[in-house]
Amino acid sequence: MKLSLFGRSALALFATAILGLGMTGCGGGTIAFLWVLGQQYNQIAAFKVDDYTGNLTQTPHEPFVSGGSKPIQILVKSGGRYIYVLNQGTGGAQGTHATQGNVSVFSVGGDGVLTFQQSYVTQGYNSQWMAFDSTGEYLYVLDQYSPSADGNGSITAYQINDSSGRLFLVQNTQSVANGQAALTYFEVGSASSAIPSPIMMKQAGSCLFATNANTIQAYTFSSGQLVTTTNGGIQLSNSNITSINGNGSLLSVTDNLNNSISLYQIGSTCALAAVNGGSATMTSLGTENPQYSIIDSSGKYLYVLNQTNNGTLPSIPYSSIMAYTINSANNQIQAIAGAPYPTGANPVCMVEDPTNQYVYTSDHDAGTITGKRIDTTTGILSNLTRGSTFSATGEASCLAISGSID
Image 1: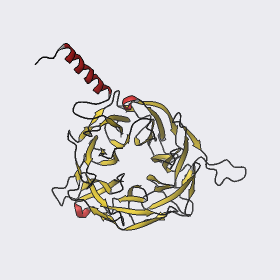
Image 2: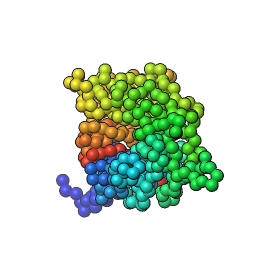
Image 3: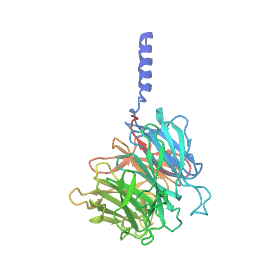
Image 4: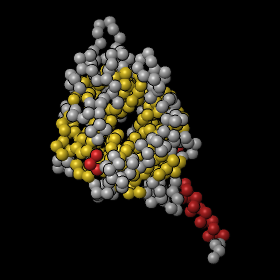
């Protein structure tokens, strides 16, 4: 059947309207932008997330240059107008580093296109992680080595300009001796309680936690200043912490020596208490080497990225997502039937989309993103309807996701 001229014109106008809304006949609108870092070529791959399918499509002009060497982490400022990329740099401690780490600021345009604004060198060496404070007005960067070369790590604090996204260094004015200049960083640990080689931070309410392999230092925020809540770090039973994360009043800790996931309750003074029944070992389920975890936005489900299996169960994927329910009454965890779920090789980071329908992992060795749909009533993950694996960029590190721009 042939369409009349009027019919063809109406159909063309409808198709144009659909494309203008960022929609297709096979899917829905764009609900988020997703960016993933690649360390092989210091790049940022960029995608649009489809509402109906969770499918990822590349944005125009991607990949983007990260603005430094070895990008390791990416954060999105509330409102989605700016993103911050932490470039680790190369080398090690003070005097041995080849390239110091920096934070690159990008503005977000239409279709998730990134425009570089400026970069800022951190005060320490061998950058590891970033976190916002509870207001989103300050950004903190964790370095493995302090400028004082005392074996501790350090945190560089920046105030964020809301209108430009740019950063301004916050000096440590808490303990300034007469006639001496304020420090430009905050120590992680002290001379009497060393916390060497910190690897990650997590903001939870009014608390900021920085961790190394077995000790967590807790801080509270005060106008950009970091105030330690204890004289020394909090010693955990974990042997080799690989990540800390969490949601609400729970902190989740992965440990690749014990092959375990553990939950800790966050107290009013940022104290941590192990949750009775809130831990599990991966080995009994056939997975090993947990590297990252997230608690979903509802607080009902815990997902753990495992980079290998132990070879005892042929059906267990080599790299995977393990899943648990979190009991709302006592925070005890229980494995979800059907888990673990396969990912690309060596997953390192995971995010949930802003509509709470999908999760995505960045797979370092595969250079891919793996997407899964969340069953919000059970926590079970399933493959996306139009394919769950998407090519990203070489040696993928962390990823970030943003909702609509406002």
